[in-house]
Image 1 (cartoon, helix red, strand yellow):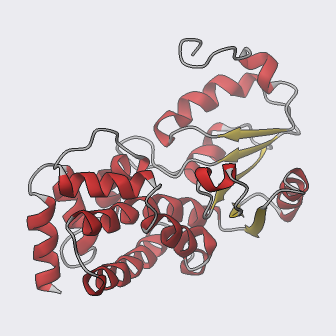
Image 2: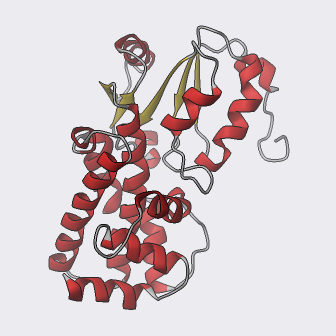
Length: 265
């Protein structure tokens, strides 16, 4: 994409010598990028997926896409957790959770980031890390909506508690471990971004509530409908997700929809 990034190297030159390849692309582009870089990957390279969204109408996560498209013996992992880019740029620190791969992959990444303020944790639950990142984006936008609606702390506390409950159930249903969500990969990331004014997903939620439309769509926005479909979201099992999906589809305003949810709580 020479028209998008100035002075970039050809893929063959950028990827072929790399010992680590970080896929910092939106989830919607992940499959395309993997197909393009696959011919140039070293067999010993470690591939790290940072996408916290889903690809396509089926709502596939990075942890589902990577093993299907990478060479059979290629080492890979997903990386989640509270890592707001603006804070990392200021050297304010962050926590990354390496999901999947092996302890050897985690140790290699730890050595790579040695001397920085990014601390890494490890779990074999790649599915849990990946889906937790997707869900925290979705539900962070819900907290943004509550701010946009001018809700007080009592209402927002109620919404946050219900959001956590829904996310635990969703992680379990989609093949991850609830324990993974309750750590930095899920709950930690949700708290970091859900109340952060610099979070794109929080900003998106506020915009939906205040303006009724979204100028810049975030990963969470594109994930709402596919994830709601995968989970069979309804007012009975995932009321917040179901309500957000109706708002995203334009069937109801955020104010009407979420005031209705609170009234039924």
